[in-house]
Image (cartoon, rainbow, N blue to C red; front, top):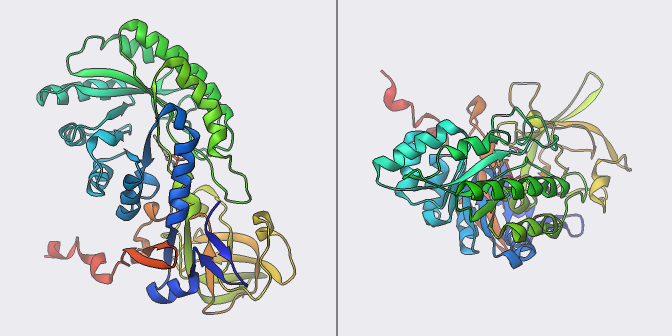
Length: 429
Ligand code: LLP
């Protein structure tokens, strides 16, 4: 469920016409719905309520400070994967005690920063990292709280670039060696192994991987406890899928049905790291058509959002539903019909101004005929949209706005040309 809907052939975000937002803030523009963000967080909180879970919103998904602050206000902690994300989570009002720190390449400086802020858990991904963390903790006279991240070696579930739990990827400790690694740190004065972590990939549209991963977690937790590690936390990561093409996502309760029995059996406190499920369907990318063009028998819509604003179609062949903000043609009722051959549409490529033929938001899509100045909405763009944006082609990054009912406010100003030179101009000789 989200709060983007057409009323009389005009797209609204909650009670605000998207056109009003485009005119107020310019394009390309990321637009988020507060009600949708909170609704999705609450869905997870409710589905897992019986386990009293620690929900850590995954900052990499969308690290806007106002979104993080909204998450904190509604009881969420944070999953961070760099010193920068830790800084942002703290800046958004979190305490270290609600932050889990993941990532295969934490530097000593990042470990020190996290220890000084008393993060809740380090998700440790290799033996080398475990010992480096022990050394940094020793230098600070602390004990580092650790959840061992295990790669459960499950079949591929997502995309080659986002699958994290198949054998041979860089993530986590190999399931066959995790116990040996843990054995060697029993009684370590500066490392406390208190949890087990697994993140299965993203996005996942079935509860089965969680069920299978859960079975493996039970065995490992029992074995780790036998070794003498007081395992109190089970972190099942993120990965819950969303609606991109149609209504393909599972409700949070489906994942809860797979995960809660594991929590009960292990007696652990559950930690979750959802990102996409909360923010993915809560965000739109709004763009304006610059030109249309026909070449080589193809129709192109050249609009002002590019691969630097939303790289997912280029990087993963991801599908994002696209439709005019103010269509003359009908608005399909079912999401899957947005790509159907319906009256008044023709096949078009939606491309941006960047100098690469890989710069597209959609290829061969049936869309109403567009003209210069029309506005387009790219749906389900709240997750890994702005957070993966760049300044490629010296394009300024988009602005972001948050809509709440009938009100809206800027939550990130559009970058300026001055921002583009800010880190370099003092270095000119
Ligand atoms: N926890 C860990 C350890 C992760 O690596 C991730 C995502 C999450 C949680 C959050 O997963 P989510 O709930 O958002 O699915 N850029 C790609 C997705 C990369 C996912 C990276 N890890 C995309 O645009 O599809």
